[in-house]
Amino acid sequence: MFKMKQQIKLLKVALIAGVALILFFATMVAAKLFSGATLKMGLSITLFAAAIVLGSLLVILIAFWLNQLLNIIQKQQVFSQSALPIVAKIKRTIFLIGFDLIGILPQVYQNAQNEDAPGLILIGLGLVFLPFAVGIFATILEQLLIQAVTIKKENDLTI
Image (tube, rainbow, N blue to C red; front, side, top):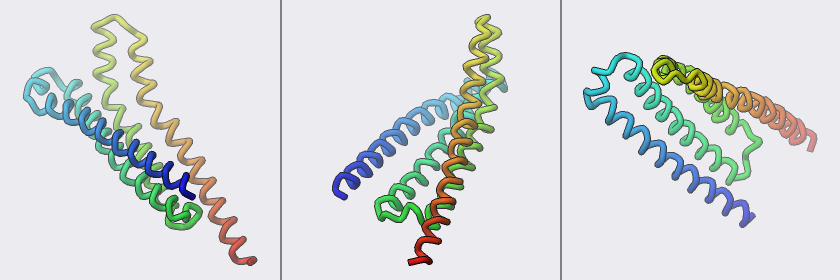
């Protein structure tokens, strides 16, 4: 029990550190976006910066829901109905991040053309499709949690 509390506290500290890093990164991109110099550079860089800032905000929202999920785990109620909506929100937000990151592709394409580096397009596509892969994994975990809650409910009724 004590070890589990320590692990949850460590996860919360890691979550806070991750959010701080994302906030720093998003602030730097937003400062560049709203400095006015970015607007003169064209639509693709503006779309790139906006996609990064919006994606960062969505990741912070996921971190908030992960904190709620950690609180549920700490109360040892992870296989309850209260965890299901949180996992569903996290899953939907992960897919939103994937759609949001499509906004980086015009700038990635432009940079690949300027630098004559076709591999850069593959890296950009990898960054765009990564949230979709994580979203599929989250969907599988959500289905597993639904099955576990159903089995727990059936076991509680038989006792």
